[in-house]
Image (cartoon, rainbow, N blue to C red; front, side, top):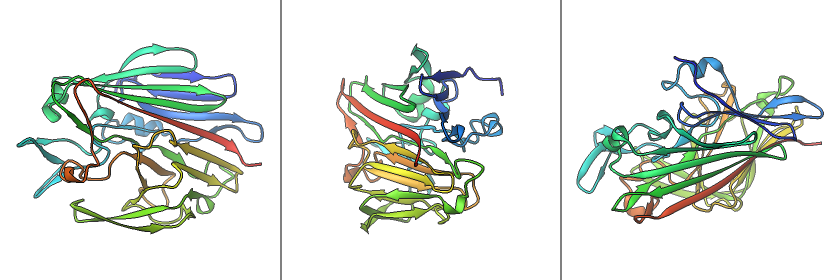
Length: 304
């Protein structure tokens, strides 16, 4: 693979981030200089994974659009039907596999855009603009998402983010001791290939990273739209905060295995198979000219 252009951001409080616009607007790294630890990477990063793009993206935080998960029609995975026509779309959508355009850049921020093209229209017959701004401030990483419907008809979509957090956060930590602070919510169980979901209460708890979530833990209706990944041995934690964005009603918690060096906490606007389950109104539907805005915060911090 040709070496991609990378955008490197820094702030005055030790925050650092790296984004690859050409590789699907991929947030590759977020790190912070901390008093007790020096430079710490919050996100799992592996140059070999980047070399295997787009076959593999087990690093950083890829963008999920216009599908946060997958769609399924009877006998056809990764297909959906809309207004009487059937389309094929890969898992997690196409945004993470398309080059983005940089619109604006400063030392501590970058704004990128993805728009419809001949390639996207074959999978998703709508005209759109998707913008992302990543910004460092006070050592924290903030990002804003804006979707604009440029089509003459309504624009249906789901969207999400797929951060691969490092576990443990430092070499002194233990993966088996890391956990996620989960607020009161409901746990969803998927039936079949997402034809149906059922929910039951899921009380607040510290969910061990040692638990096997390779089949994905789905949560919804979080009392507080914030998750904290804690590494108590390293005395560090990462906060993922989307309290300003109620449309992100769901979280997918996943890791490839209990030995993987990453653990994923993924805010989504819909769970799997949303186009097929369109009557359940999980899809966001924008009228012509309509916009959708979302905001997030990620913070790596010491706990003492």
